[in-house]
Length: 319
Ligand SMILES: NC(=O)c1ccc[n+]([C@@H]2O[C@H](COP(=O)([O-])OP(=O)(O)OC[C@H]3O[C@@H](n4cnc5c(N)ncnc54)[C@H](OP(=O)(O)O)[C@@H]3O)[C@@H](O)[C@H]2O)c1
Image 1 (cartoon, rainbow, N blue to C red):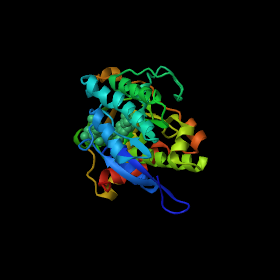
Image 2: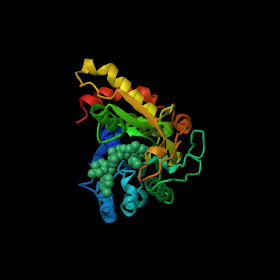
Image 3: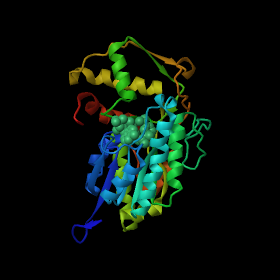
Image 4: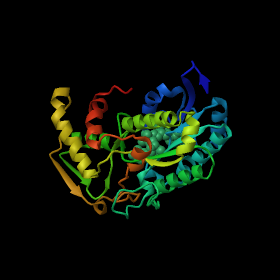
């Protein structure tokens, strides 16, 4: 940690997974907090435990932020060992290295640690019971971190969309440009979150954590250590999310010079009609109450997040 003047303390942040949806946004939102050393898979492959240790030791970070993960839910069913190395094992190694360096770890996890059997928003202390390999490996990662006595925040989020990479938003737009009819499941309920909003909330949480304790960010995280759900207030189905994407596109396309969509009909179907290699929870709504109460941080509704990010997602600007 460096003191830049009498009142400002600049920290060193090791950002792992800086090329992903959330990681990319974190490069901007974390910048005011300190100096960032960013890695992506070509610099640090998380299947290599020694490389993780070497990278942390040479970076000397105050804070490790891990936004990397094996996030492909269906392919994970065929590659459980690889998914477990990246999602289950590597985060524990990061926590060990954080403890060794007297640093803190911020890590992301998922609504898919839950099975969907409870029909009210999931709280952080509800029992996880993942239905698929991705969820199981992410839960293993959470447990591996919790088992190490290092200051940490596990930030669970859900249904991430954004300007980079392939996500539900980009898939729906692509299909709606090609087809007249689109079938979308209406029995999976959750909370869509924009990568930028998650990254902004992360930076706000970190700023609050350190100002609240008026101590170092590491001490602040040590005090608040645990899991938090980082998401907006309201939820929808995959079908409702697709409907809003198409409606918003329709309202904005002409003014933005975008090609019209071909799609004429959006058809609700059940998950049983739309079989995928990985089972998904029918209900994975996360309660964001603990984040609001602990840090005073909230995210806009998913509709607002979508409207705010829409132009950047379709017209570029995040490159
Ligand atoms: N996406 C969602 O809907 C969602 C929902 C809930 C929670 N989350 C969680 O949020 C976090 C960030 O997700 P995201 O949506 O930003 O993911 P993302 O866009 O898929 O980015 C993940 C990044 O991890 C990298 N990665 C994968 N395997 C790696 C390896 N072996 N070594 C190093 N890097 C590797 C990927 O690199 P490549 O590009 O080279 O593959 C990619 O840049 C993850 O913890 C995820 O579990 C995501």
